[in-house]
Length: 456
Image 1 (cartoon, rainbow, N blue to C red):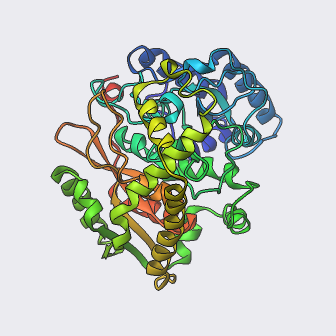
Image 2 (image 1 turned 120 degrees about the vertical axis):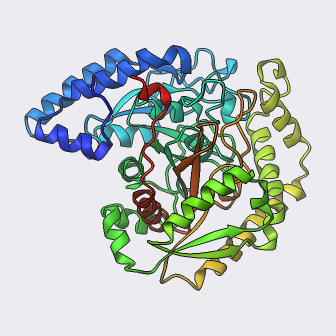
Image 3 (image 1 turned 180 degrees about the vertical axis):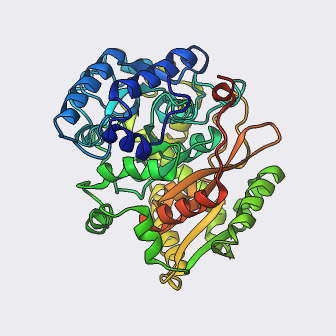
């Protein structure tokens, strides 16, 4: 086994040079699963034989000079609310017993087309809600990995795969990625197809990758975004996706600015989180302009509006089985659905109206700086990963799910407990969030790995 799984870019380089075999890459990931799965519980299904067969097939193609795409031979996990043909999509729920997907979700089909090896299905919280999962945090097994993309984040942190797909309605990509010390991307709303993914809501659901570096996120995001439908910026996205991170960083020259968010929302962070992320931002001042930016007053109610939309739309989706089969739902998802049944239509409509108003207000606030590579920056989570009784507080992620803006987290330090802390970037466009997060990652150079890996 390799001492450390190379990044996607490095793996691709080694595969093309013949220094690394696809079979060895898959073997490394399967060995990590065999080592740690009994303790961490990141997977609900691992197709080891299928992955080995696909590695042989892709290896034969490579020998003949045929490379399917940038993910040729790269093992990837899929959150278990996303359809993979012939596999169950259980959604963490007994209501899905016996369910078998008839075809790949478009996101899975695009990954396959780019050459990815679909390794298995990762654990989700029940219906991508708030009930704690069976998965444990790789940095400390007594702590949560976050939710709802719990298994995806834990699997990536332990090198069980190069990357994994997650979904986010509140904070379900960014929060587990931060808690597990890896990188996570929530694209803009509508940027990537949600077909074939069990919904929680219509207006708040997103799908995106979790990986170890910004460049790895970018490598997975590219095939997902190219050809995606339903995005206002789809033509722009398709053009941009052909370029790499360095291209976009260079386009902005020296005009790189981090807007450090201030306001009532930020008061939710613990002093330790504020200190660690503050130190990281101070280190970035040698490479970027750093300016404070007060959140609009409208942000005082943004979490309530987000919750209202989420509850109402989740209740609408589950109306055929809830509350008639309440005994098959966990307590947290049940509470959300009960809440949704109580939301008045006029209040739901008002929350959607406010969503458009706040989005326009924030865009106008940043609009005067369009010549800059401007990114909002704030902690990814209010605390380090808490205990197993919760998935953590999504308060620092839910506003960006509500507004549909791209957000990305990278690890930036460790708490006194040893648990990682994430730094979150938010922007109006994907180029801004990718390029700025990539730059800051290179400056911060966080390279720590979970203790389980370091003792091998």
